[in-house]
Image 1 (cartoon, rainbow, N blue to C red):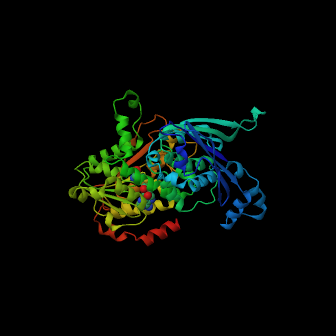
Image 2 (image 1 turned 60 degrees about the vertical axis):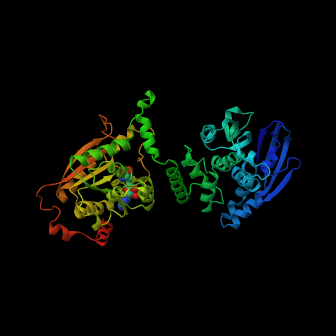
Image 3 (image 1 turned 180 degrees about the horizontal axis):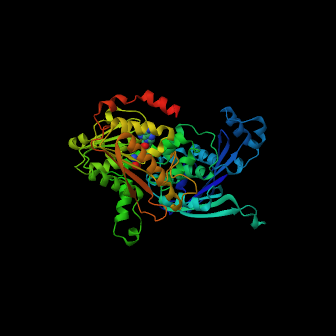
Length: 510
Ligand code: SAH
């Protein structure tokens, strides 16, 4: 595994300053032993005009396997041979990344006592990796490096030059060039993105990898268009770690984009006058919130529950309209609520605004006294997140126990899925959706709910309606039937209010 970094210079700023910046003298080759082999640093050229440092990694496959086994992840004995015979020694870009951070740790932090000004300023840089395993191919390599200010040259390496018909290997030859980056930035890009491209299992992934990723990603990862893919691959697709990292990145982004969030910027751009922007369709989430606000206005709601409020987008819209005097966001996810509270800047809000809004954690699968007495409740894209057997519990908590005058429910229309170009056939829109309903299924459910609890249901399409498959989102607006014996303060209803326990038993029985 081999990587070179080249810079060019002038007599006042000789290229050989690279040696100071890397803390490795150009005149001698140096070797560093690491837990999986030896890293060599040498300078194939070191002139004032041009200087190249090479990092060569000699991987000891045996040490590597032993190390893995020492950590209790060695695998079955008959798998042992496969562990020795693999491409690690030649193409271990995740090991190269570790070596980079071991050998050039000060340079990665931008520390250089003897040339501090050079460390802080952009340099003309050229990085070359002759054989880089790249899952996702040249296209992904470009998508990862170009947004960071690199000019990218990437060529697929054929499996065998004598047999071009065999196609390309999973290796590419990569050349990166930029005059806009500091050496520390360049090293941190490589440290994160080389293993991301390799996408092999890193045996060392542990919770502190999240810290390492965020440290190395400081200043460039939060805003990177591929930050999701980078995070997930870097953390070997460990869901809990990825999620933690994504949350922390989101918080960094929120802190950076001070007065507006990313979505607002998107929308603003979509509505700008630029002709090509006009063609960009309004996001479905915007249609949905507009439809919900209209329904709430139509029914004169002032005190509103946003049940399953998620990251607080609707709460934010509600806050903009003084007619909504009290807004309560409820969600089962503390993570979502934390993001909502950051997004809404609850801590910095004026007293009067702050008095209108409240966020709290709660599960809709249980009756909850705090939800009683509101004009309206919104369940926007929430019901499909519950397992079907839990749905009666939610139904009871909202329509039986909380009983707001109006309930607005939105959910995907599964029939519309064939119109999403990016959605593979038969897939739901979100991995956490437990079900998605046809218009008929939703109507049947909603009408039965209305019937059971003394409401009437009215149906409204949300988003551009397709003549065949209907709108992308479907919405039901439930209104309490006037003079219905089952309405709010009926003591009989109150008595039949079930406890969380009973609900649970019921759901289990179902
Ligand atoms: N209403 C928001 C978020 C929809 S995502 C919007 O329209 O954009 C679904 C949300 O429901 C998630 O935030 C999830 O945490 C929440 N949720 C799922 N099950 C829940 C439950 N049992 N109780 C409360 N919230 C729940």
